[in-house]
Image (tube, rainbow, N blue to C red):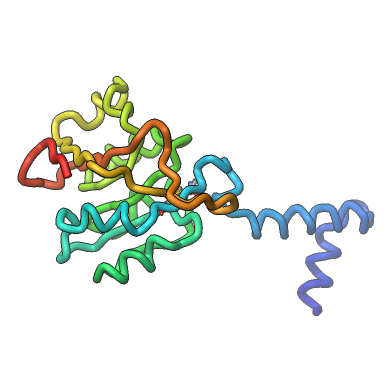
Length: 192
Ligand SMILES: C[S@@+](CC[C@H](N)C(=O)[O-])C[C@H]1O[C@@H](n2cnc3c(N)ncnc32)[C@H](O)[C@@H]1O
């Protein structure tokens, strides 16, 4: 109580408790904000089928890191497949250069794809990213990864579930592929 009262007083401007309250509300809202508030169209979780089809390419002896949380379902799906992954609701950009992991595996928010890829290139560790098909045509993507890139192309499109507007069996119209960097897969182009 004492701490709260001190904080309340410390936040009041020129003794104006009304302004202090506004600051409090902003701070509380900030604490409750999640990355899912950034861009609604980024908030799709990959359904189990999207991970199961590439299970054979996911290493079993490495530390796996999935930094993009959404609703956290990826951890449950991977657990059912026999993997324990690092999957927490934290800022990718804050953590990526220091996080201890071997392989990053996730479906990144497409709206931040370029910035995320730049960070991944700086870290230069293996990854498997689900991303829209045309990313491979983008000059910035080729410049970053073409030396060590392998692609897995699904025969049946994986499905995704939106956080707040779930629609059974949704697949994006642009199609997705699995972009693998420094994964040392048996072939550069793998058709499932
Ligand atoms: C496509 S979803 C990924 C869902 C999940 N990993 C999966 O594949 O099932 C991408 C999520 O990244 C999250 N995100 C956006 N910016 C982020 C950031 N800077 N750090 C961590 N997560 C972020 C958003 O909350 C968004 O829901």
